[in-house]
Length: 68
Image (cartoon, one colour):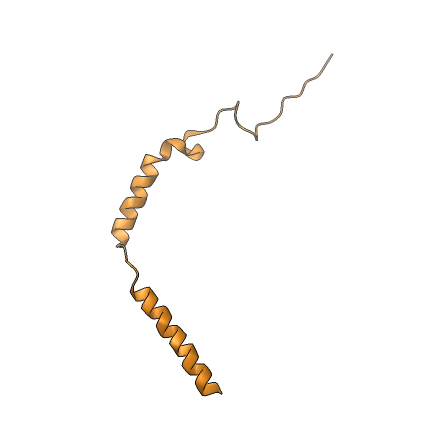
């Protein structure tokens, strides 16, 4: 029984390796250049870079209204 189960397991491994071998690969240098370009194009939408106006910031400290 263990012989047939190991054959089945090896068939699954071979199938996975064939699937991975068929994938299109991108060079790391090209992926890094694409990522850099994407970041630069979308930098004006990033609140960590541009900041958030106090009127639209949901985490701003609430003003306390006090009556004298």
